[in-house]
Image (tube, rainbow, N blue to C red; front, side, top):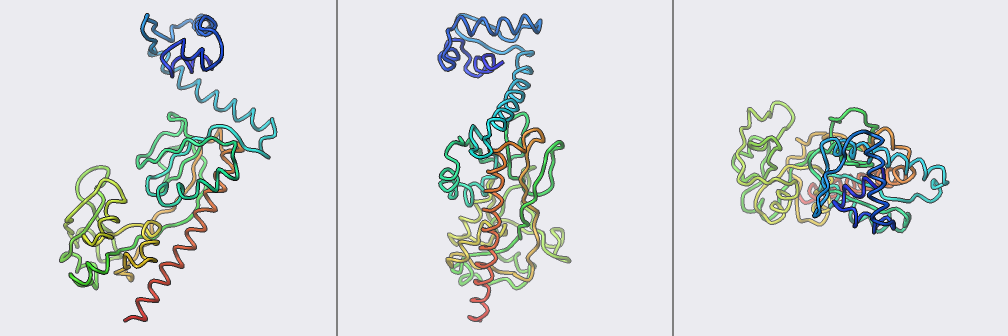
Length: 309
């Protein structure tokens, strides 16, 4: 199965054999034996390349999952709880990766040098089993069954703008005032225009906000707001440092909303793997520490604003 997976991934018996340190004939023989055992052809072979049959593609997906579980079992029985090791595939939202995880990776690699990381920054919800992801960070309710979840922290939705923009255009006192401002939003994954929610009675239907700019990534409106292009509404974790540095100012603070929870999720078969366990603990501690910092930064910024007023 390992030989078959490597041949399928490389599209070549020769390349797979070199990586596995066996002969090309041995690699071909292993796959031929496997096909005979299964009674189906897994690979189409030509003089130039190797490709998967339909049965081969399905078998490859299952082989990957099985081999991952075998590796996890081996690591556990070898006592690797004391020294986690091996390849760890992590899937996180782009903003979480950019603002929290990537700056913290040097600390993680110092603690666990034997873990090889495959970090995927992704704003789409991936199928963890199909894409062989060991652990993922998710925001909001889980959309995939069969996962183990560990709830971490709740984020808040805040509104902010650069002080230069507010000096030129004035500061809105209520969400109704936003109709007179340049708004920067994120395009929904389903298409259409962004919608901002505030406490009742300020519903999207009542406000009917128009956006001067919209972006397909959460960082876009934040960078635009820092540049003085308008007002944005986003999660506190992403703008806290800008607020602490004075590059953005919180506005409409009476109209903040509690946002969704952030969770770590894992396929049920692998959540006790040592490498998954230590990464989960690291990510949970990282988010909790940042959550406390954010509260301090935002509270401090609000206190400064009140004293100034």
